Structures are given as C-alpha cells and as structure tokens.
Image 1 (cartoon, rainbow, N blue to C red):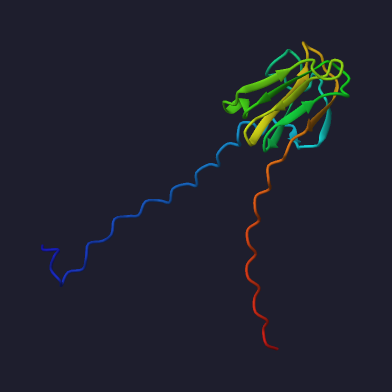
Image 2 (cartoon, rainbow, N blue to C red):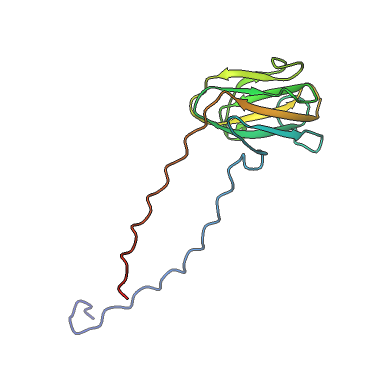
Length: 166
C-alpha cells in the first residue's frame, strides 16, 4: 500500500497525551513565617517577647523579626523597652542566606540597644530584637533618621472612553 497516493486518506493521528497536571504552587518565601511585621522609617513598633516566641538565632532568648525597607542610612533604637535588649541587623532573610551586618547590646539608653547610622545600600533588611542572654519582656523598636524606599510608580490609567451619543 502506498500512503503517498493522493487517493488514500491520511493515516490517523497518534493519540494525544493526557493534559499534564497543573504544577503545584511554589512554597512561600522562607521568611514569610519568620517576620512579625514591617518596621517603617520614623515608626516605633512595640511588642512582647516571651517563651512562646521563637528562639532560632542569636542568644537563648525569644526573638521577634521585622522587615525594614530603607533607601540608605538608618538608626535602630530600643529605648523605652523594659528589659535588656539585643539588636541584630541582617542584609537579607537569614533563612535564605542573609548575613548579619551589625549587632548591638547596650549602646542605647540604659540597657537598650542602638545601631547608629548604619549605611546600607537601598533595599530590604531584617531586624531581630531579642533579649541579652535569656531575658525577655516588652519592647519598643524605632527606626530613626532614615529614608524609606520610594513607592513604585503607579501604572498609567487607561484612556477614558469617549462619551456615547444618546
């Protein structure tokens, strides 16, 4: 039999493969579960570390993490806290390779921590507040003397539709 003959029908198509399943969603970024919230320039956040808080890094005390987006130098301060605080600043999420770039124990008022005018490049940083040794308690964490990253530009609005005749 000659299949190239113009009088014969073409051979049947091979069976199609079943559709591939939808791939699973990627896992959330590693620091989503780590971060307690955002710390913004000029803002003070308050909280309470206790032994229900995680203790995965640094001292044997409970810790809280904040994300800080800055456009340059920043001062972090824990004055007003009611325990001996310890601050650590990372250049990224420590679960994704972020490195410790600065830490402080008692440079603030009394036993408070203060990281003064660190000059990081613009970007996202991660701040960990914990207690010295195994201490915990109520804290105030302030981001002072810094500039926030500019907001991304808003996309242009679509042009208005021309008025319709009545």
